[in-house]
Length: 346
Ligand code: TLP
Image 1: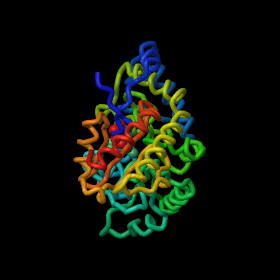
Image 2 (image 1 turned 45 degrees about the vertical axis):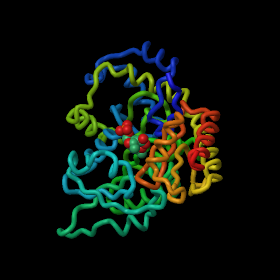
Image 3 (image 1 turned 135 degrees about the horizontal axis):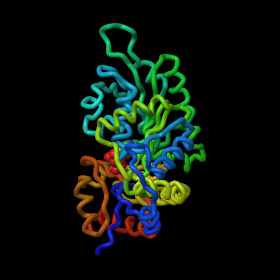
Image 4 (image 1 turned 90 degrees about the vertical axis):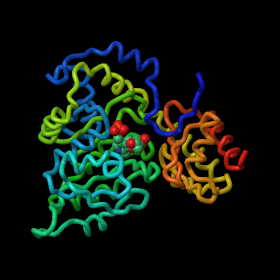
């Protein structure tokens, strides 16, 4: 079997042998009856980590975000969100279809918004306008190159939301990365949002699974909609056990992914035609521009693939690399050597 170096996403990790062992030994029950002890343990643990009353296990980050939006809003409401955010761009238009909301998109700096921008976007109380209901933030910000939302900005946005009677949802698919990089606790980030979604299936290396956390009343609504969306699962402790294992063993090691991403960025910066600032690489995502190489991104991706390296091209000019559990520092050096060859036309 060919050993690919897969830098397309941190979603590509495979469960480790010990994680599989934990899965095979998981105690299970029917979770639609609330009787799966492993799922219950995971939900309680994640709620506590995020400083919330309750949490609910769901199949994907997309479902977690969409359930949060659905549970916070009424059809016709407006949701303020950053223009390159995941819920707006990469969830199949779910906000419009499933919740009947409209997004009000604001352009941030690497995905990060200021409270003043949001304040300007909040609709006045006038029958002409939709009702602004919810603000969605993303930490770390995927298309922002893994940028960390500064916690003081989150706090400012939260207080603005409260002063205007609005709710805040945090897409924290990679909140673990932010917390490890800054040493700011998950619950400290969690306090600045009414609801938080987190993913176990990205940097933490579990095969499946996300959670939504918030107040008990909110999670009760999420639970109802999870059933409606077909996300109620049965003996799902088999999967939840991978999540519990990941929480025990795969959070602290995220700093290795961050070091690997930084090394990639520093190495890439040396290559002719690559445009990026390594200081913007704060976690495990590296996004860079290749316009000056004269080669379109997809062509670079094809050339890299011929050398066993998988990367993700965004349109013509941008490439995203994501480091994770299955990428070693040797893989990074190998990838840099191949980039050097490909950019020099060899
Ligand atoms: N992101 C995926 C792709 O969908 C782009 C990736 O490879 O990065 N929030 C954020 C911030 C995400 O990056 C993702 C996945 C999700 C939510 C959705 O998670 P899943 O894939 O579990 O639905």
